[in-house]
Image 1 (spheres, helix red, strand yellow):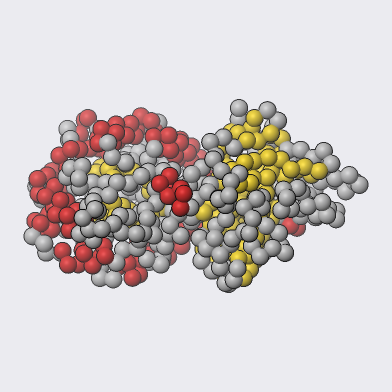
Image 2 (tube, helix red, strand yellow):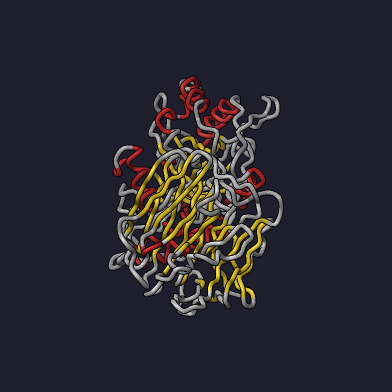
Length: 536
C-alpha cells in the first residue's frame, strides 16, 4: 500500500477545533477558568522565529511567508516587558496564526509586581483567534548558573505571572516553559523539574534543541537520537510539548541538500512524536542558522505547507485512491470514455504521484478526475469567510491542451464559473492562476510567466481576507514567484454539500466530468491541498 500525503484537511471548522488545537473565543466564567488552560495538541504547527536581521516585524513576516509559505505559527521574542500597544501593531500581522511569545525581566522585580499593570494590559489586548504560547524568561539555565537568580526565585516569578494572567480568564493563553535542549541531556547534570513551576502553572513544556548550538557542526545527527532526551523529558511531564527553537548550520562542504534531508527527517520525527509546534531559528545570531539555500528552503516549505491541519492520507488501494480515517469525506474517480488515473511509476522518491490521462485530439477523449465529496449534511469543504489555501504539485506533459474538450489543466476546483461560490487553481495555457468567488465578489490572480513542461511545479492559492495570493515554485531549481490580487470576496459557501471538490479536472454538481470541457490535467499530480486556516 503506497501513500500520498493529501492536504484535503478540513481545517479548524467548529467540529474539529480540538483536533486542530485551536481555542474557543468565548471566555469561561472567572470561577471556572484555569490560569494554565489545557492545550489539546492536534497536528504539529510549523513556523519560524521572526528575526530583526530581516527588517521590521512586518518585513520579517512577509519575507518568511514568501520563502516558506504562510506560517501557521511564529516565534516572537521581547528582550524586556513587551512595549505599550504591542498587539496594536502585531494583531493584524499575526491574524489567525498561533504565536510563541516570550519576555524577560528579573524574577525579583516580577514577584514585587513591578510590571503587573503593563503585563495585564499586554495580555488583555492579545488576540483571541488562535493559540498564544507565552513564556517568561526562556532558557533561564545559564542565568541560574552564573548566579543572576536561583531556581526558587525563577519558579516564584512564574507562579506570580500565571496567577496574574489567569485573572483575565483567557482560554487561548497557554503558559509555556521553554528550556534549552541541553538541560534534558544527562551530561548536563541538570534536572528540568528544578525550573518547573508545577502542573497547575504550565500548559505546555517547550525546548530549544540544536544540531550544535554553539559551533559549526561536523555532521547532521540522526534526529531520533538528537531529540530523544527532550521527548523523554516531555513525556515525563505529561504535558503537551513543543520546540520553540531548533536549527543547524551547514556542515562544511554541504550545499544544503544534506541539511534538507536532516530537516525532512526531523519533521517526520516530530510529527510522529506528536509535537504541538516547531519553530525554526531563522537567524544569523550566534552562527548562520538561516535557511536560504534552495534545498533547505524547500524542505521547510514542504513541512509548513502541510502543518496545522488534520491531514488525510490518500491511500492507493487496489486500482483506485481511498481516504482512510476521514470521517465525513469520500473519494472516487469520475471518468469518461475509459479514462483512468494510476500511480506514476516514474516517481520513486517523496510522495507518490497520480498520473492523469494523456492529451489527445482524437474524437474519443479519455478523461478522469479525482472526486472528493461530503458524505453527510455538514459541508467540510466550504471555507465560508475563513482564510483558506488550495493547490498541488504538478508536472505537465509536453502536450497538455488544444482540443475543444481538453483545452485547460485544472488542478483543484469546487463549483463552476456560473455558480455563486467557486474556487479554482488552474494551469490553462501553462500559466498558473487562482480564482475565488464568494457572495461579495470574485478575485482572479494569474502568473505572468508560463511554467516549464515536464518539471515539477508547486501551485498554491491563498485567500487571506480580501487578498488572493498565488505562489508558484519550481521544485526542480527552487525558484519562486508570488502574485497578489485583491477585492471583495465575502463568504465562499455552497448551497449543496454534495457539490464535489475536484482534483485534476472539472466536475459538474452531480459529480460527473463536464463533458463539453473537462479541463483535464494532462500530466502528474502530488500533494493536493485544501486547507482552511485555523482561527481565521
